[in-house]
Image 1 (cartoon, rainbow, N blue to C red):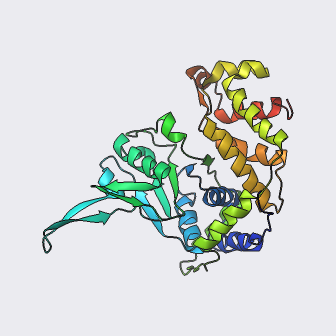
Image 2: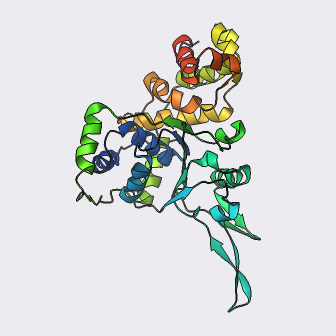
Image 3: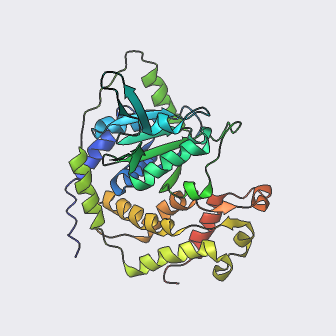
Length: 325
């Protein structure tokens, strides 16, 4: 039997948002999704144009949570050894020693992950899935928590290596980072134009706290009706004609995998926890479903020609698939 959720860390989570706001402006939704991934063990794929504070947000979050942070700039000449490490020869001892790579951290920012070739992407995704890496004949378990935040630049596609569908599926959510509002951008301009601005964030949570928060989220209940609703949403992408989604059926080429149902379940629990509820509401599922589904639904060329996006298809599914169907 699952323990009752006490929300003992709810105040601390609010403090995380408050502390982050001292440095990062207008990215509350991004921070919300990053915390969902961190608390539930899911990796996040970020997509947005440069200059939207993605790196600043992740770096600041690492400081607030007292986690080790590494930023890796993915380039076409990057090698797997540059990521996970390699064996080097020690002339003093005449023996090979392991030199660990930047993957040995808690928060990994894989910047422009689609700029590196398949071997490097595979090395990263293997570490994400197995939570361990092998260098030479020795296997190393990665420190927990271990979260990969990979970014893709949607503007410059020349010379990129798009992630295969099977690899993209390993990310819990794909989050689109949009431009700020006028008021938020004004606040950013005023703050950053002050060349003396150098706010030092204070730690709020530690690694042990993150484990405890995960246990509390695990105690959130979700009714069988909503569990079955998640399954119906998943199957609506696989058999759209059975759900009266005739127009959408023309466009869907690849359907969502079983990982989608798992991730949608735990993400909805995390949203309920943030709202200080010990149960999931339909609104929780509806809010996070686009982030969980949008990189898993692949559309065909007909959809591209008609200007149809995955988010539009997901919106139709959420509107037409009723609870308790």
